[in-house]
Image 1 (tube, rainbow, N blue to C red):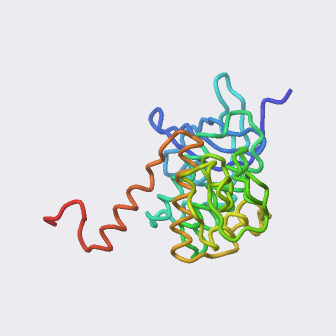
Image 2 (tube, helix red, strand yellow):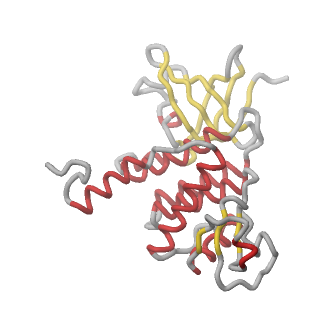
Length: 264
């Protein structure tokens, strides 16, 4: 049996070890999350410098050692971190990576997860689409891949499909119509804007190649963000905080000062 493994993967995490080495965590299609040793990768002239950077997608030839795989050679396919001077987009990317890192297991077949991640990063770094919208789309679609798809075909309680006023129930994980007996199922269900209904249906059901091919109004985006943030938090029982820094920046930009410090 060969001690070598060839795989394609994207760097999710990197950690320094020794004088000039790294241990990187990659997401690979066939092997899920993998910890890989990169000898000398921190030396400026190392052939491993590029392919071991955060968000770099490469083809790796790995040698199986006693404790973990070691990079024998690698070829860069795509370097998303080339936009490393864009702190805003990198922060969104870090948030997305954190979600993937927490949910993909070692040895897991992760072709769909990898494809969605690569498509998301491509649109994040190569389009003018709102990073907030891209992140919402990723979060909801990723939850679908994990088996947490919200039911958006009809009312989840009575199965009525011809609905004028649609509500979203976090308790029931899907749409509710405005019938009295249906809304009784979740008194905290929120009434959806028509654009939010269309966006949720598209995110859940569209083909991957068409997933990001739409835009929404500001009001719809705010409602989508509210839904995806809460849905993510309740399913994972974790509050992701990577984007809190951006919320503070936006508040500062809107007010001209830091709203938390009235003396500024």
